[in-house]
Length: 378
Ligand code: SF4
Ligand code: SF4
Image (cartoon, rainbow, N blue to C red; front, side):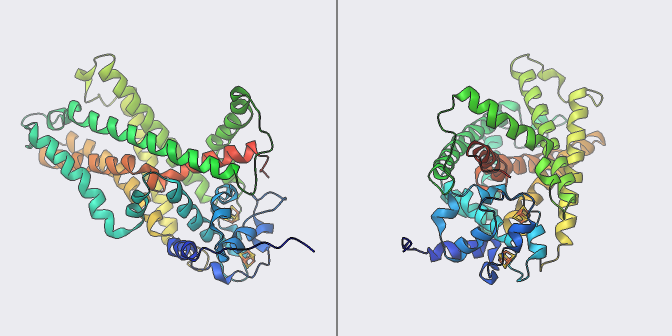
């Protein structure tokens, strides 16, 4: 007789997954159509059918240690074909949200980010902090003369804030990702290729995974929602461009003493790259938002976490571009006000990265590396 296994369902977990947008999970009757139509699912123990039953049974530990929930790129091919309207694509997305919040550190931040009632608090914190710093350094006024943002918020005020925030984010992500990797190693798909040197691990698993991500090859495998490929590509490369711009400006100010060059001239290649990045970001976000608004709710439904993230990213890009336009047309009050709003939004995006949908980028990358390492790939 086969060994019996005691199942201990975690009903609170089921409720949370339902709350994160997986309310259809109980409709699943295990026909496995979803696993058959999913182009990203491995042949051996394919997803998302098994995840649907684990979720119904409240098997939290199995799901949290399952890299497969991150191999899904939420194309919703499966939800389109599901005969029961169980929306497996949305259920996996809800489990992913639960997962990264579970591993994140400090965990109470995940709760703040996942509920709309805390949004004023999360936005209010950088507003009060920046106002306080401007007040105590005597910068709480609209500077006279030519519009130069350095006169309003000098870099010696804003840079330490963002450096400290970046250190917090790096530590928080390192703790979260370590817990996540450990969880996967103890899970249903333990690594088969242990004992690799770091160099071989990077060469065989990290680099090929990063190349795949840069090429966005997984998005190309989806049948429906091909638009997501273009939108993700634009958003991904615009963030890369804006990160390069930030790095170059930071290096120029602190290591080459070039702060007198700010604001950069319009023809400056760094400025051109920044403008190109902002336009690509706005275009990518517009595609995502317009497609979400057109979404057939019977197949997929965006959640609060989806919306708040894309709207903040959108507003960051728009406020960045507007800051520049209003500076060029020379309206000081408006330019400095929009710049302040831009800083608050950038703070939100960076400081809360480990607890927002931004964290998906990190957790998915780690899961894809783990999938390669453990031989868990299509
Ligand atoms: S989610 Fe839908 S397609 Fe997948 S096993 Fe359940 S009922 Fe079948
Ligand atoms: S949403 Fe797409 S990638 Fe995810 S399980 Fe369904 S078919 Fe596969």
